[in-house]
Length: 544
Image (cartoon, rainbow, N blue to C red; front, side, top):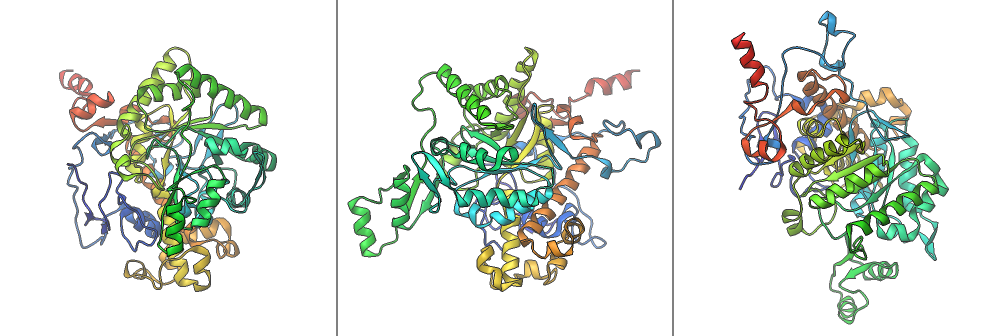
């Protein structure tokens, strides 16, 4: 079984738990004291691009990442001449990697522009999304990248008022939208996701009435983590009963005799709240098509300018139908989440064994997009998710789906800086600890070695201060500063990979910029093997 290394001596990073392909631990904790690469990058930013202890070391890569069929087994091509998308300096030979432009746009009639080709995974009804939302939303808005409010936020809100399927009040949803819009500067967007319960509760109607076209809407078919809808766990039996009254399935039944007896005895219980399964009332692919067309038509009639679809790691039929429907209805974005992804609560055995892994799923998405394009049907712009956390994997995802892929989805990777910044703020500003959900009583050595002020700890502090001003940065959660720092590091790394491929805009990235590190990957993706790519051109040079 392939197992990624827990340590990287060159960067001075180490995973607390078992690392996944993304480089994140399979179980990521909000109270973690470090220090995987993403964790450290949230503090030290661009410093983590390079090996540590410059001046006293030399370093060399192991080059052992071409094993198996996964994103790690793709290699990024380098070119020794040329420049695509960069014209001002290329004729003079004055081009630098910082000349690479990372702004990305997606959509049909009403395009959305982002400063960077990143978008968060959906952050919905999980407690961890609610706790750290101030950091997530403000950090993403300031960075100019989209954020997605996931499913069931209204349905689980005790303070929300829903009468006869119409929302009268939704304070938690309001808070999430308003936080992002407070720092929104014209780049990025905020999406509200709709599942079965959200549609029944009238979330779309509420959002459009209160916020208008400032908010986009995302229809949800599924995600890469599981195939049974959204889930959370609650311990409070009274809250579990409340959720049941909202129409959710609670497992076990909190009103059952066994649960009531256990509560009286004082025993701790766990109630899993489940969403309804989508489309189980439909029997054919054609029935799904008609239902989806009606749903999109309704949303457009309500007034939504931007509508997207999120689909999971279903088989080829599900992928093809999602792509065809997204194209036929001219959706602004189709998000395709590979198996193994996920940020909240999912059955672990299902996460490991259900669905199509990211690389294979995304390779087929490209193949199907080319089929649509060849027959004169414009495919919807796509975003890929499922195990992305580093600049290298971001580039690989964009290249694998080029020219159709516009964004890369990062779930847990974009949450880690929110956790870390909140923990630091809880120590340095004890009065804020309960508000930001800080988990530490003191700074661990992994943080204190850099200092005991935000200015010293976060390498992105001063660049963000320059953007928002001295007064504003003092009001920002530290988690937002950490997100800004991480995004800046990811952006710099992406610029370097793009410069090495001589691609100076996101639109100039091409599929031939990645090659297969082994023949199994070549077969699965349709990419050329690393030793075969441009081999014909090489031999022509030798034989000239």
